[in-house]
Image 1: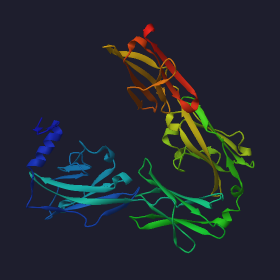
Image 2: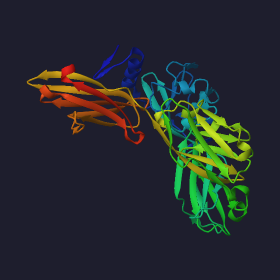
Image 3: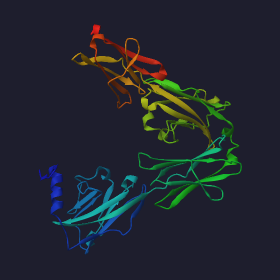
Image 4: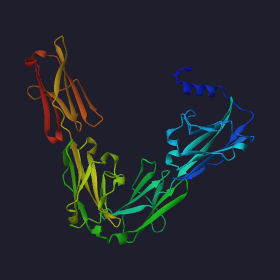
Length: 455
């Protein structure tokens, strides 16, 4: 074990750092790399190269490729063999040492199946005995995603709403709208999200006030490749489609469900219409990822939010009348809030909003005594399992509110609240109090009573 001030490192790491501290910049050689960034497309192979000058064999020189920390390399080549100890896990089996050119000091590392996470700076480090040299390289990863899709909501009082969506882009793309004359139009909202593979989904919303004779384009631009993809929608044509004359209805009142119960989200077309050939989507605030997507008679699992996987069931026995119910199993506090139900066909959609209120009635309050001296006592009232944040109060025997000395509401990992409130009593000869915890809009409460005579 080697000790450094303020550090206590394992033998392998400490030894490596000791070598770095004792190495010197060589006056006999230097390392150079490409003058410009290396560009690679998602899914392609990238070749990283560097050169030892003056030219000489690198057979017995250690070559180390790394990102930010030399101690966790992308690849190490030493004395003609690959060294896999301490190699970054994500590069195991995905990098290849290229032998061509090592006799003249040229070294190359091929990274297979480039992903967004490979984007960024790399270092090529040479070490010969106590002498070293290195250079940095910039790898720019880029991916052209899908062509944009334009979805039009049926006409409303404020005009026609258009939503442009595109998936599979890297880096974060630029999205913009143009009218038929090529003039830019201002989006009312934009949304970006990176999926588990690091690729971007983009969404931009536009409201068109006059849809009588308009064609509108949505373009998605990759700033690294300086390439773009676009789509055009003819508004007068879409206004003639079936869904433009339909409405989607949902519950007029909030849906109330207790934690652990199953949720029923029902929406339907008016007038009645067969929805078997339509896409039906339940989402929270954006189209992707969704709570549940029905398309071509099946569930589209690839578009579902992680927290709803395995928890949704579609009840479609009345789909020929345009009525569908999404069942969400075992309600959680995180399910609380607004949902949208969208019916779509031929890129035209109608939607309804649903308000879900998840409630959790916690345990019955427990009052305990903490400390009793000089004619005073402290009462602590505690309870678990509440949602949303409950109303807590102490009351005297006449029902009047007594101010608490302190109160703490903490939310656990499952979203439920733990309640603890403290009451300091100065006249213990007449203690008769109630601790009340309630969900006001539910009209339910749980209480505990403390009486000195019963203590």
